[in-house]
Length: 397
Image 1 (tube, rainbow, N blue to C red):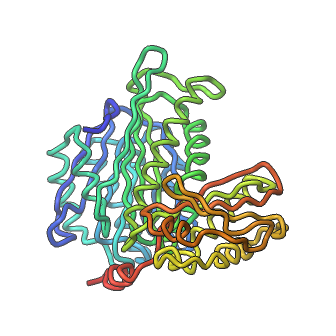
Image 2 (image 1 turned 90 degrees about the vertical axis):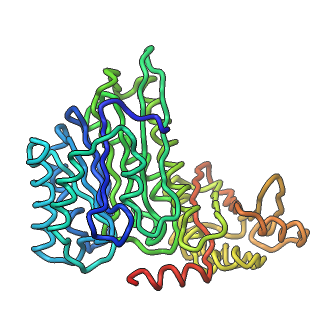
Image 3 (image 1 turned 45 degrees about the horizontal axis):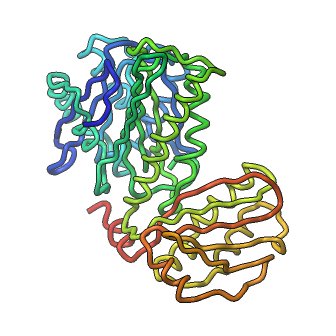
């Protein structure tokens, strides 16, 4: 059982949007929550993204529930789609006797289809009668093409009291840096202001969810939310040791969930970690790392264990970052093995057998040392396989 923060309950049902699997989940807090969120950078934003981001602008101190449906994205659905998102929140608020602005909404699934509101309403009626402290049903209800449930938790000891953090995510396809279709819900019983919560969450998201790639597509529905209900009575204040430890644990949760999303990438057989060293600043390091991890040519080369290292340097070169490539070194690493492929911008001799044995591993690490500064960054990606085409191409079926 995961470490469940005090004061949070979960419910999940099959309301008929999908054929067999659970498709509606609710998170309910017994106390008002500070809340923050990050949302897709896609110009086309789904109705629940518009609604939830607007709610958090008005109210970030009294959030009590989150309702999520899978199977229908409620994206590109016009005014009716937004009305349905609002009606979903209002109906749940009424059933739980909450303020309307205390309910957040998320959706994932097929774009361009209206929510079947009769099924949503019926699902809410069933769900509010079946709250539990077990989050597994909720984790199942939010999945689409996922093959695994994605949860991570930690329990901190701060000032002699326990503080728990739980993360639940979904994501397998349409994953690309700058919020990638992924959803993530982070819950904690820490007491923390919405301003500090937003600051810490954004910093963590930039290091985790915004540094992963599966297929280069950014969804219309991407959303990551964090709720803190204060049940532990442990206050987190900026600049304190407690804040530092809380952020470290929060970042650990988000990184574990981000890695699980990449590992479960549609059709993926390998995880690719890209580390950029010696960059002039952190943003340049992140940009190069993300670009390499997102390159389809790099992904296919890794999948077929092709030692075409030129694809890696080419990706770094079109990242938009200006650097002196004549200083660059490039390495491949896996399970204690390492080969240098490039030295000072030129290919160097290396043991091809060792290099191929590295590419044959389930996790392959690429290290690009620019030798032009002190900043570094990591990105995660996965290989691109024939299976990806099969899964992604039949999503509507």
